[in-house]
Length: 207
Image (cartoon, rainbow, N blue to C red; front, side):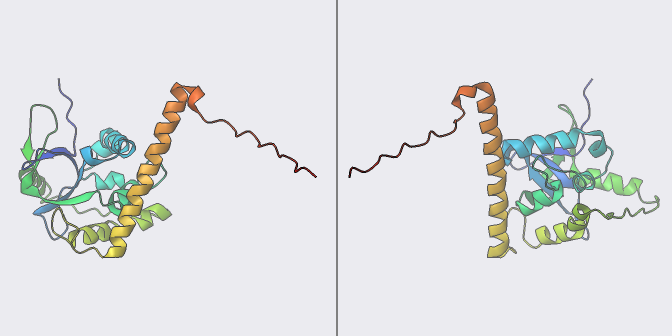
């Protein structure tokens, strides 16, 4: 029997696998925010996929609810890292199909409509962000507004400083990945690890 996994899907126009972070945007229910999982560096890919499969994520309606209180392997906040590194992509909900298992799929637009119907008479509960610095820094509204400034799949609405910060964040991710790969290589073959450099003998000048 297949196990259903929430928050995962594919883009209808490209077939790319995605994690749906926001099923819909506030005041813009026809668009969502997704992460192209195949475009992630290995260390980030494993962190995101592992987080999606955790019970805490599976118990939420939106993955961002879990990601905004989850940390990456390098100690950074997961949602803020996805945002600052430019990994959150705006997509029309009608271009996303949710794939909870290998045999079933449902359009995200249809899923959102169903959830909206089921929640129509439910009481509205607002969860505070809490007092931790990471949760205060990761303001959901700010993330959504920043991404929503530009159309889907583009960097329009971002100035040079924002783009440069995004590139630096990506570079940091690659540095962490390179460090992890080196550690794995040295663990497999310890002899490859550089040793301490031998001191260079000083030659006395002839009188």
